[in-house]
Image (cartoon, rainbow, N blue to C red; front, top):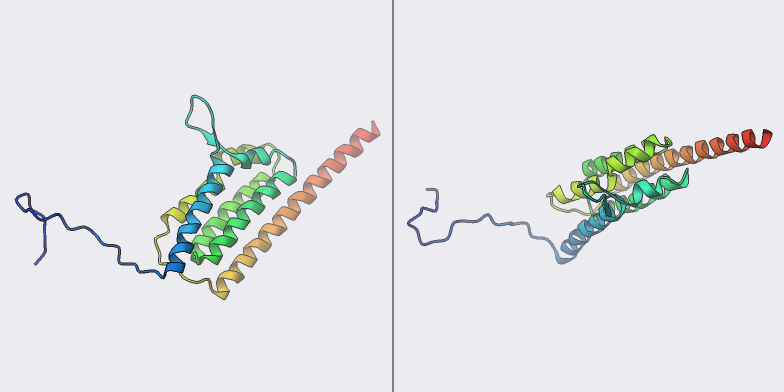
Length: 182
């Protein structure tokens, strides 16, 4: 027999109950993750609103304007948040999605002008905050496999950042040689 709320009933309608029971320390950890990503998304991707529009941007595309170092700094900030997500037990599939956002932003961000314009639109930190907000799975303690996965992703990010720095350095070196010869 299903219990339903009928208009003549004086009993309140049935509500769904969240039966997830977490130890207090896990609850505190889980509550601490969302504000970190919310703050990061705000500062890096949505801090300033263009007057008269709904378009917002943050420090990420502005920092990216500094050749070589800007995209590196932005990637390091995002990587720090990813480390926190692993520490607090975010599942690998979500870590993978978040990592892809960071990597896409970094890889395209290396390209002068195009990468800077892309950063204004892509907003990897805001995308990662949305992933964390939608995460409804029960939290768990990070495992060795999570850390191996994170180290592999951070290693790939490191290689990409180093390549970007080398390309930027070579580019500026060639410009300096060209200007010095004239």
